[in-house]
Image (cartoon, rainbow, N blue to C red; front, top):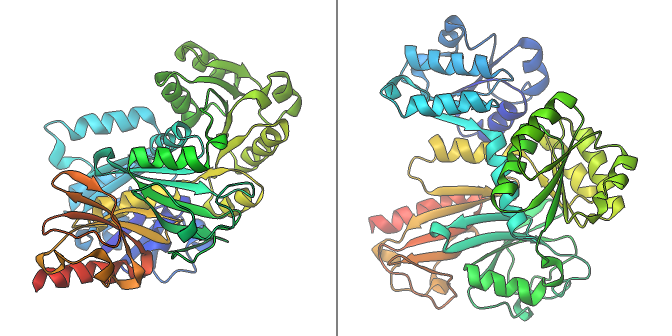
Length: 449
């Protein structure tokens, strides 16, 4: 696929790095930014502004399959995407940060002008806010995803030193029925474990199970850590801080929000109903002490810089906040934040790549989600007749891929080795990314038998 990316910043750089080996990619941006951000990748670059028709034509827009606008300017992104749509048949994707632009483009897409409009508009702040809310509703989880219309859930937990699971071999853990371990991230490397794998401190373990089974898992192994969240401290009242406060009000959670800009505070105080808005600097330890930040169950750091977020996180931890969630604007800082002891680091990276992959590159809809910082993938596949009737333990899925869930006649099943598949069942398969194509081929070739 020929892909043209406008913008070589954090978003554009992530997309280019993730897909340049599999696709023909051209990046458009100012010359100085290109030299800094994508000069080490094997792809084409053009210095210029994609809102200029001549630059789009130079990039080969009329022969392109996908145009992604993700520069730092919402206005330039919108103009570039609409121009690309006007002069070619390319599919268009536009990243924006302005709520009003997002709502206007969404309304336009649903109107009589749909044929002219941008194919996919992504408002990252909203996606990341939804991620945070999902994690807050499951207090001990560091990631939560929903599958099969909510009948099966994926949750990621970190193994603490004092956990009942720490240093236990998986086969001896006696998990509740219909709970599986799919993968473990250890020292930043994701792998698929087996029954002999021993769980270690700091392991990030990905579980799949039915809602009731995962609740039983929490009650059995994580009950002490699973106290319900009652109060949340939000540090930073920008777009995400505002969206999060709104979302917490909707589900009845009490929140304090600290924002340094006085004018922004006036807007927040007028628009939010039950959130306590405090005008001050979230990196001011004395202020945090005065506002009793340490008594909050969770602190969420959403300021406008990674340096401030790191400082806010460390101060929150020092004051006794049990769980700290922090946004990393630069994906290169994720590891640093995690090493500093931050419980959950929210980054745009996975949301960006999943939006691109699921919106355009994954034409058959088989890849649902990237996990483990892109090292693993969740696939959804149909069971062909050639694989029906055999116990799962007899299947030879490439790369030790795991069937994590089965949808059989609209019922969700978390399988074991003896579970037999039926033709037409949908299966959720967990695979390492490097083996995903082989897994897809395995099911495809079985369908041709």
